[in-house]
Structures are given as structure tokens and as C-alpha cells.
Length: 398
Image (cartoon, rainbow, N blue to C red; front, side, top):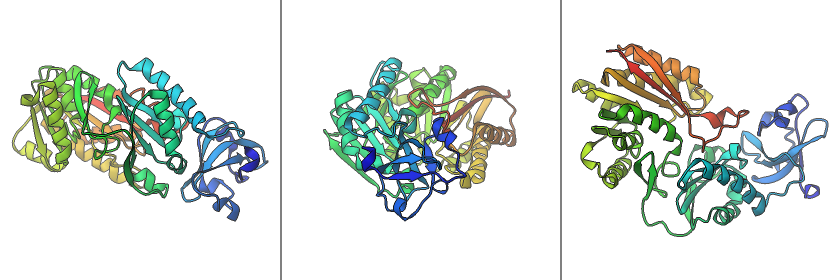
């Protein structure tokens, strides 16, 4: 196969050791980008060589992306076929089946599972593919076929939305590749029931990454009043109700997400213990403070305020503001959980911003627990972006 593939080469000052040791990306300024390289169609494959013409592996190329090449296989002779994809799916499935009792999890976490730029979330008999790299968009039919073969799912949905696709020069689109979608899917997790909208919901319809942090919050929530800010479909709020919270209040800007949260509570028989508040989360926290409201457990799980290095400073200010507004809503001796899914804000920066905000909110704190994404979101140690989620749980004074 390699005889038919183009060859691309690192610049002399680039360091091939990182690629040899597992780093999966080549940035545009690290590669010799002559006219021949720029003519390679996005999503095609090529053999990557170092400056001395020694092969480093088989890569997929996108001349339109800042990440101009992604390592597919360290073997330059590899052939990227449906069978090759199926091998990686089987390896990923084997680990998830060992970790989880039911088929509800992230099955493929992009580079960390050997399928660059590709997300697959499983919802029982359905799976949602996010092809966020040009090669995955081009081969999504093969990915879907291999997925059906390996897992036995019948419904496969392509969810082509989000910032990552824009950076790859890909258009947004969502479509059913096989099977039928008749409405939201019930997802059991940590004893709660969530409703996932696989066609119109955020990302793939549900955030599996918070599963272990939901579980930790449940230990604090039994018999308590809980506030879940930026709740989406009720992530922390429904988990708290499943653990025996006396009441949960979910705040979100999306009426559709809050409707799904209510549906989940209804399916659990806990609708009477759930209150929803639609509105801007910052404004709603200010209104709650003005009302004198306090809760035993408050958890804030906002969107990525710092999705890039350029947005880092503004993002950290936003996280600090979340903490400042949330802190007064925690009853004396209560608990505050703060989350960040921004890979550009590392744990230290996020922890410092959170602590500043709590202090500015007039409270003193103990940091009890630091959480991350669940094991169905494995981290590639060489790639910080795969370890994006951070969750901090504090006990506040009183």
C-alpha cells in the first residue's frame, strides 16, 4: 500500500522523538508543506518520514487544518480499512465491557482509543458517531458498518456538529445512517435515569464523562437540598435524587434540556422532588442569592469557557465568577462542586480560579476531592487534550 501513498516529511528542526514516543499530531509548522503536500486531499493517508527520510508511521493528512497530520498507525505498511477499524473497536469494546454492566458508555475516545478525531458514544442498541477529523468523515460509512458488526447495534447516527469540525473545514450535518430514532433514549447511570436526545441534543445527547463525579456527589447529597447549575439534562440533579436528596433544583438556559431533565425525574418517580429554572446561569444565581436561597450541595458544571489558549484568561475569569456567585448559595458546612471541561485551563489554573472565586464570595473552604472523566474517556498521556475534565469538591465554612 505504501508505494501508492504520498510521503510527507518533518522539517529538519522538528523533533521526531515525540511521534516515535506516541504523540499523535503533527502541526502545520512542523511539516514541509510544499505544493505537492498541500495538494493531498483532506482525509487521505500518507507515510510520515523524519527529516532523514526514516518512516515514522502512517498518517491521515488535512492541509486545511492546523493539525495537518494525525498518526493512524505506527506501521507505515498499515492499510486503513473497515477491518482495521473493527480491530480498534473490538479492543475498545473489550475494555468497556469489563468496566460497565450495561451498554451505555463512550466507546471511542478519539486518539486515546486509536481512532483519531473520532468519538463514538453508545446508548444500548444505538450509537452516535462524531467524525471530527476529515478521514473519519470520509470513512464514516466504514466506521458505522464496523460498529454494527462489532457491537451489534442497529441504529447508528452521525452527529456532525461542533467547533472541532469547523477547525477541520467540515460542514455541520446530522443524519441517521442506519436504524430508526423514535425519540429520547432512556439511559441508566448511577441509579438515575437520563433522557438522551440523540438527534437534537448537545454533543451526542449525554455527557458520560461526569459519571464518577456524579457518583461522588451522590455521597454528599443523601437527605440534602441540591442545586445543579448548568444542569443540561439534569446530570448532577438527577444523580442526587437517585441517591436520596430531598429536593434538587436544576438551572439551565435550554428549555429542551430541562424538559429532558423533567422526563428523567418522571421515569425515576422523582418528579415531585425536582424544580427547574430556565435562564442565564449567572443571572439565576444572582436571583437566588437575592431571594436568600441556600442549598446543602451546589454543583456548577458550565460549558468550556476556555476552549483554546487564546480564550484562557477570559475563561479563568468566568470560572472565578461562577465560584463567587455559587459560594453564597451554599449553606454553612455545605458542599460546592465546580467543574471545567476546558483543556486549555489545566488543573492548577482552574483550582486557583475556583479558590479565588470562593474567597471573593466571602467563604472559606476545604478541598475534599478532585475528580476527572471516567475510564470510558481514557487519557493519552502524550496528549493533554484527552484529559480535559476537572471536578473540584469543596466543603465551605460554617
